[in-house]
Structures are given as C-alpha cells and as structure tokens.
Image (tube, rainbow over all chains, first blue to last red; front, top):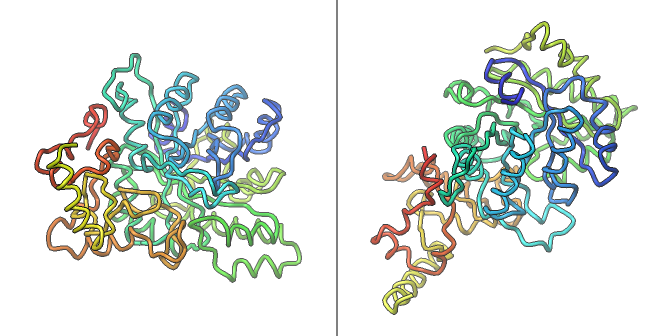
Length: 313
Length: 123
C-alpha cells in the first residue's frame, strides 16, 4: 500500500507536489527537480504531456521518482492513448511498484504546440478510473484474468471553477462511484468558487467518500500569470488578480502572497484532506510556502502527527 | 451488415442527424443526456463535461460553441423521465457498433453489452 493511500485512509493531512516536466538529463535531472520540495511532499505527480505538450512520459518519470526514493502519483490522460495503451501503461506502472494513479480526461490537442495531432479520447476520465479498478480486480477490460492482480490507489481531478458549477460536485461523486479515492482539484484562483464546491461536496457527503486535495499554484512573473490566465484550459483567473501582479513592485513576492492567501483559504474549507502544490519557481517555493502556512516537513508530520488546524472536519 | 440493418441505419441517420447531430455511434444514450448527443462533444465524452469548459460556458476546443455537456445537464434536469440518468456511469463506446442502427441494437440488447472486465466492477 502506498504511503498516500495509508495516510488518506487514516485521515492524515497530505501534501502532494507536481514535478516539473522533464525533457532529458537522466536520473540526475529528476533528483535535481525533486530536491527543493522533497522534504515537504508525501507524493509527487508525474505529469502526462501537460497542456498537450510532449515531454518524458509520466511512467518513465514515475520510475525515476521511485529510484530517487520518492513516491510518485502517475498521471494518465485519455487524450493520447486508446484503452489498450492505457491498460499497458497501468500494468507497466504496477510492474515497477507504482500504485498511485491520477486519471484525467486531458486538455485537448489544440491547447498544445502540436494541434495537428489526432486526439484519441477512446475513454474519458471517469471510464479510466473504472478501467484502473478493473485491473485492480484482476481482469483486463476484456475479462482476461491477471495473476497476480496489480494494486492501484486511484484518483482523479475535478475543476471547481469550470461551468456547469453546480454539476461539478455530481461529477466528483460520479468519480467516487467509479472508484476514485482522491481528487486533486484543478488550480482555482477564485476562492468563492472553491468554497462553493467544497461546501456542496461536504453537505452532500462526497468529502467522506473521496479525499479532496485543492491545488495551489505558485507563479513567479507577470508573464507567467498572464499565461495561466489566458492559455490554460479551464482556469478562470479574475482580472484583478492579474492586475495585482502587473502593478506589484516585486511580482515574485506578490505571486507568493497570492498563493499563500489561496492556500490559507483552501485549508479553511470543510473536508479538505490535503494540498497539492504546483510551483513555477526554480527555487524552493513549495517548501517556503509550506513553512509560511505552518505545514511541517513530511518526516515531522509522520513523527509528531499534524492536522491543518483551521480546517473543519 | 445485413440489408435490413443498412436500411435501419440509413433511416435512423435521416431522422436523427438534423435534430441531434447524430454521429451514428450505434449505442444511443440521448435519453440519459438530456436529449443532447455526447458524441458531438469534440472529446466525445459520455460521462460529463471536461475540466476545460470556458468561464462563459463555451467549449475548450471550439471556443464559439456552447459546451455540449452544459446543455445536456440543463436539459436532463428538466426532463420528466430519465432525469437522474445523467449521473449514471456510462461504459466506454463500443467502436465496433459505429455506423450501425442504435434502434436495432436497442431491440437486440447489443447496445447494453459491456466488456467482461467492466461488468465486474460496474457500480
């Protein structure tokens, strides 16, 4: 059982962090990217061609993370593979001891730099969750038995700030019904929408069936903020947030303050099981934010216990 | 495909294409999706909207088009029958049925066949 599964089952607060994409440099590059954040996160997301840009595969990076002594969360998107290829990658992941799987439908090819590529979407994100559970039950989709059966701790993603807003919690419930056990929520720059989502998820009992992990994005520059606001599908960044960074004397400090404010707000929502951090800074931005939020390093949390004190549970 | 099957498929296409933009997937779920065809979603998603829907409710892929699933959810919640079906888990598309008549597949039960591995874990 992965430590992410064990901790979420035990109701412990978790921190996950997104690995930057890797384009080469071997195992040393994985270790170099991991180092600034490894003390704080319980597990690290290996992304699967994020924003429809090709990079080293999430399976390869997950294997590298394991080799570096870190626990991976392997993302899998439906955009680039049909069901056979998805099954093969899941089985390959299991063979290497990768259990945490995050299932996504995926941004469209038009969001990337090769928009002429064929989009696949043979399955959708919810069906991919079910597929991972079928393998976990010891059968390929066809029904062909797998012995020994792999074990997966399956998660997915939901976007609290994309329409139809009231349906998002029902979609989260559908993912829970399909077998997802954790949801890493899309970055949300509109706290009132995260609040609306979490309140509804809490009131309808969804947070008791699936661990909710809001994402916090640490940006660094005006250009980065403008890019996120205009080019990342499904993100709704208020113009005043963009202006705030544009008018700041030090955009990096301002971006950090915004991340801190959003994280503090997310921690105060009912039923939040942890936080997922995505940093566009080259330095130890995630570690610095965790310290400012009062989230201790992983070892300290494991030794002394920790629960985000402001969260209602 | 038999001659009868071809005729049924042709007839179905003539009726359903102008009204719902039918893509002839052969396993129609219109009644579960607010009489909105999910195969007209550029990602052909059958279990709800992706996370890329724009703040104005338009499609990530086709910015000028309203998200198919926004319409589906709104309409499903207004349907007198099948209202809750929009929350059901729909299995992967059986691509071998593409171009066949979903009417015939409904009568024969062929459109309800799912892969054995799927049936094992279906909620």
